[in-house]
Amino acid sequence: MKFKTNSEAETSAFGRFLGEQLRRPVTILLEGDLGAGKSVIARALARGLGVPEDIPITSPTFTLMNHYSARIELYHFDLYRLADAEELIEIGFDDFAHSEGVALVEWPERLPDREFDHLLVQIDRLSADCREVEVRACGFETQGLLDRLQKWLVTQ
Ligand SMILES: Nc1ncnc2c1ncn2[C@@H]1O[C@H](COP(=O)(O)OP(=O)(O)OP(=O)(O)O)[C@@H](O)[C@H]1O
Ligand SMILES: [Mg+2]
Image 1 (spheres, helix red, strand yellow):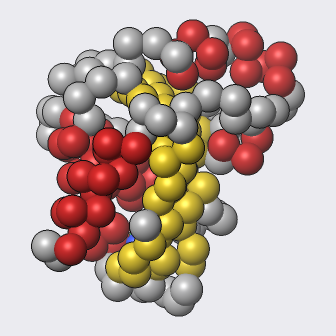
Image 2 (cartoon, helix red, strand yellow):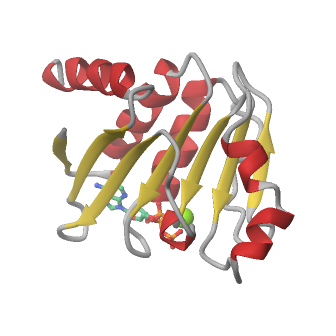
């Protein structure tokens, strides 16, 4: 599925809906260049998942991972500064990405492989305020989620 947004608020609305829809553990990869809007989606998704408004959601730029308690545990990764695959093991990526929680990953381009079920969200910056967002279910487990996102899109 593919759609365009014309403001940060529109991209946020998608992220929040996605967060609200999550019922079980899932890995979500957020692809896009610097400033594409990955963190915009991550913040909104966290709220949709139930992270209280008074808990700030900051990018784990240096820590690589932030953990939040919500309806489902949320592990927010930003792998931009990942040095190598060994560091990925050190931060326990595999444990979190295949756990009872939601793993949300900025800069998944740094991952050595994607041999796991995931929802792929690709954001393209078309202009200062316009983004193209493409969402794909990569694996069987995320297909139902994609179906619900598609139904939501037609009501927008
Ligand atoms: N339609 C839009 N959707 C999302 N963000 C938008 C949109 N239009 C403008 N913006 C702006 O683009 C920027 C997106 O920044 P954000 O931090 O989410 O990017 P990022 O993909 O996480 O980048 P980085 O890789 O540097 O972390 C914000 O400043 C936001 O206000
Ligand atoms: Mg970011």
